[in-house]
Image (cartoon, rainbow, N blue to C red; front, side):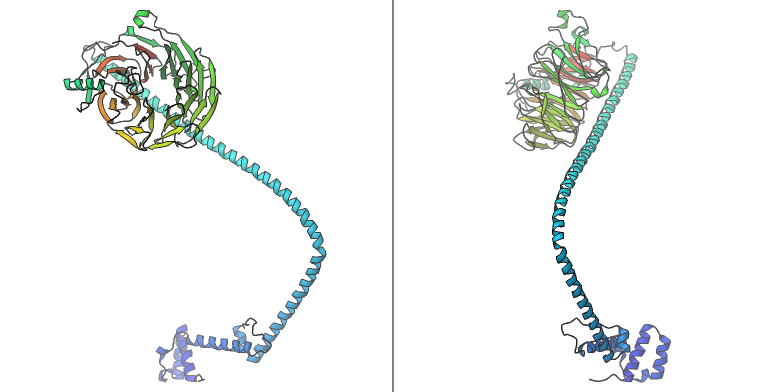
Length: 617
């Protein structure tokens, strides 16, 4: 093995001083040692060469000390020394240090063995005691676990109840907010209507020389081609011509319903939101924001012939104890059963109530956590269906006076419900979805998604095979239960569509030879009639000046009555394509309906009144 020369060592030290930043020391060493005269190529010497050289030397001494010690087992761990020991001591001293270290380790190992033996002895002596203690502890721990498990179950139950209460409070808060917003919207609409009324009265006073107060008669102007099309529509034929666009023009007084053919039913102390004729008797039900419903006994025959006074008495169905203007008990919806023996009402307190013909409260049905917006009897009369702001629909067993099933599919308030048959129905909501549900099923039988706004109304056709819907997205749609998407998308309206009605014509009706049509009423002030089979608009009735909230077909399917916020009821002849009767009241109209004979029309107004009109052509 070649040895390191002094020249090479001087060069390594010189390089180390340069690399460490000791410039002056490096210069002095280089000058005195004559580094520049050596024949060493500096490029061949890597950086840090001196440090690596010293480290390798120390490692060699360390290895020599370990391998030269005969007492060290070759399988034992390699012993490492401190760098200072390696520099300051020779190999023999290092070996002595290693032997001393090993001796101390053996002494410690023996001490540990003796300690383990003593521990084992003590362990054997106390094994029996420990086993007995373990058994006792096991029983105690088992009891403790049982107690802890029971405690945890109680805690979980309390936590679940707390979470449910929180969710319930949140739902109630949200429903209250929605209801308050809806009330505020209705209030603003009512104020705007009053403001428009004051403006109209001002204009009428200024133009008194052109027409007398109360003369609001109108008739329709329509060209001969449209009349022929309207006649074809009555007989179920489609001519392929363009839809009729009906426009009102004031001409004569022949269409105005005289006051002698009108009965104004007074008694409610707040706006009247709903009305419905009994299917079996001359009884009219009305529901109001004054927390009451009323059953009015309307004289049969024309008002002229029966010579009744202008006041007609009513049974008052009170929904609030004491004060009758308790807003949380506003009556929002009502419906007669098929036999006309029971009246169901829904109100803002989330309860449905069932009354008999004597005005007696038969049942109070409590399950909803928010106002009820829609309510329907099935045809058989054994189930009542309700839809609520709490996002659910509930089917009630009327005889048992208890809820049968609650359907919780919607993510927003339920706006409308409608039975398809005695056990299945459709629901619509602000979440833009429509669900088809069946009693006994926990999942929707079908889901209809396609609207882009709140779905305000759903109605099954007379056969239960087609479902119509209308929405704030300004469209109405027709769905078939055999398809997952709509079959017709009706897009002629320009504003929200509030309600729709099927004609009482076609298969499954008393007028099977007439064409099935669908009518829609919109905030764009128009009523439109649609061909249900082709999905085409047949005609547009444009006589109103404000949003149209309600419409109804006459029982024979020949006329449509529409009610608007412009205070007017128009009765349209589908065959003639014109308004044949009109009546103007003192407030916006929320609902219109025909009696079963088709000779009387009822309407409920925002001025707290209900009007009944004689209709004979």
